[in-house]
Structure formats: C-alpha cells, structure tokens
Length: 428
Image (cartoon, rainbow, N blue to C red):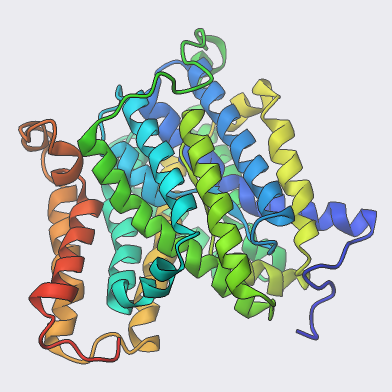
C-alpha cells in the first residue's frame, strides 16, 4: 500500500478533506438518485411525495455512512440503496407501503442480531458457496430487466427513438468507462445522468408541469402503524440473505485491498450498523442500504484510503435532505436516462458474477453448470410473466411466486444443497 497518499486511519488537512469528500460524494449520489426515484415513483404519484421520499432516503444514507465510518466497519466504503431490496419492493403491491417497510424493518433487525451469532457467520461460506453467490449476483441484474425496460420506454420518445437513445447512451457510458481514468472513471454514472438529461431535454424540451404541479405531501415521516404480511416478509428475508452476502463481500474486499487490520471485528461491526440502518430505513419508510463493492477502485484511483475522507460526503447527503428545491431538480432526470444508466450499472453487476466462475473455479462439471443455469432461466421466466398471470397468483403467495429473485434464490439453494448434492465436488 505504498502508493496510497493517506492510510485508513489518517486524518486529512482541511483542503484535501474537502476535495476527497467531494469525490466520494460524486461517486455516492447517482445510485441514491436512480434507485430513490424508481421507488418514489412506484409508491407515489405526486412530485411532493417523491421529493419527501428522496429527502428521507438521503438523510438515512448520509447518517449510515457517517456512523459506519466512525463506529461501524471504519473502512472507506461507499453506501447506497440496495438493488436487491428494490427487487423486493417492485415485486410487491405499490400501495402496501406499511407492509413493505415493516418487512424491511424486520430484515434490518435480523441482520443486526445475526452479526452477534458467530456460528452462523462461520457457516456462511459453507451455505453460500461460490456458485450460489454467482447466481445471486446475476439474479439482481436479470430480474431488474423489466424495470429497466419500463424506464427506457416510459418517456415521450417513440419506441424506436427510445430504443436508439437507450442503446447509444449505454455504449457511450461503456466507452467512457473503458478509456477514462481516476476520478473521471469513478464518476461516469454521474456524468451519464447529467449529460443524458441535457440531451433528452434538448430533443423534447423541459416539461413545465413537473416543476409546477407538485401537489401536497400525503405521506408521513414514519411507517407506523406497522403491518405484517407474511408473504412480503418471507420475500424480503430472501432479499436480505443476498444483502447479507453483499455486505460481507464489500467489507472484506475493501479490507483486503487496503491491508486493513481486525477484519473480523470490522465485519461484525459493519453488519450491525447495516442492520440498524436498515431497521431505521424501515421505520422511516425508505429502501434499506448496503455497502458497495466498487470502493477499492475509487481508493486506488485517488490514492486515498482514509475513512475520514468520506465524512464530508455523508454530511453533504444529510444537508441536501433539508433542501427540497435541490432534490426537485434531481427528480427532473428523465426515466429513459435513468433506464440506460441503470442498465450500465447492471452490466457491471453481471460482469462481477461471471468473473467469479473462472476465478473461484466454480464450474468443474456439467451438473455444476446446471446449478447456475437453472435458477437464472427460471428467474428470467418469472420476471417476464404477463401481469394478468401474476395477478392470478393468490395474494399470500404472490410476493414469493411472482418475485423472480426470490424464486431464483430458492431454486439455486435447492440445486446446490439437495438436487445435485451427491455429485457436488468438495471444493466450492
């Protein structure tokens, strides 16, 4: 780690603190805007309620980031809304807000409690083998495809124009990500949102009604009274299994990249703060958070591994939450732009999954390849089921049977540990 300008526990002078904090902020904000806007539009029609939702989300993410840096894992890791929880939310009924966020509250509490049970933590690698982790990572990308398609084609462009706009935007981001270096590479998503929105409005003009008819805030600060729906709760428990694995991988990946000490302690503390942050998210009715795995790339490109550099980013997120007019500007980003940017993010998600196959030697036989293939195809099949078929599923079973991600996780667990167990190689 001799190339690093600042080590993990090194406190920065004022100017570098602000500059590095700005860089981390630029890396953090896009995922909050994209996922926050998708969920806010899913729940609420009025712009005022969407702004209020984004305010709460920004505040929670900023608070969680500060707490993680000071008292949690104490590592330089970016935090944002969990895509896997987005799947759980979109697979539920939009008007079941209390039921959804009660499930998120329960999931957060379970993550917090599990962090204290070392026998479970020690058995995680045995239960979630490399093939299962590969499938879970790929499932997130595949099962969000219907949402991405809806975003790309929900604007004012004709179908062919929307398709062309989305593909051109995607390939521009891919090229920029390939050739840019340093902080420019780390903030490609942000520039995609900004210049994509400018290009979109250059063609169609700025919709005046979005800025005038905001409506009144009808949602509340909290999700109380809590409402328990067993189907939704079970669905989110599977989502939180994936979040748990994601959190472990992010913390341990960054710790390894910067040669951090006390990795086990950081992992346990990080899981506890993540659990508490998700419980808090459930109480305030917003999507839960998770640590992101791309932080090592930012650290290596900037040469700064100091955890304190993220504090300005967390504080900035909290402050922005108190400025609704600024959030209203963020919400002007068109859905088609969010669609192709989100598609770009999912290419990285899927790439990370596929990279694990040779790296971990995850597939050594045809049956082991089926462990990956079967759940992915079943999930894709369910993800694109027509609405009328999904609506015909009994209400109590719908959050599970119509949730492509949950069904994929169930199938891969059965395939790995039961169906193909006899032929499974000892090395996973």
